Image (cartoon, rainbow, N blue to C red; front, top):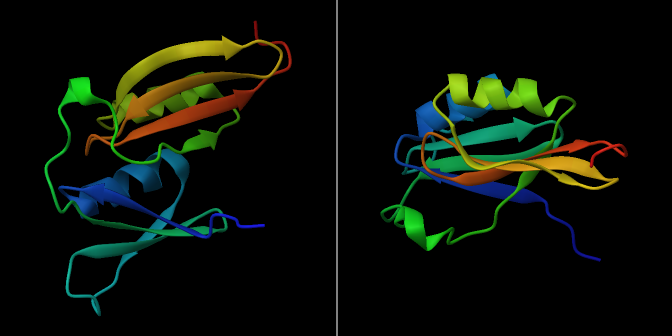
Length: 125
């Protein structure tokens, strides 16, 4: 069975994007000076990844995403949503219930990347 072992986030300003994810989700980020491009190696609660300079323009807003969209499990959707927006993120799709499973919603980080939040809740309705 295959499993996800590494992920990358593209951004026009990788350093600012690394700061956003560190402040919202508690990730650690460190620039890798050995690479020929601006690249931050990140540790996301046991998952490794990177943030790099975006190689092409962000797709227009009406075109949706052109990459995978990852969702992050959180203990409190509303508190995390407030932290995202306080740091320059935006709501892409309002919070909604998946009945009996969770609360879900989607956001754009300051670099325009879409990601989701999931708060498990068997009482969601």
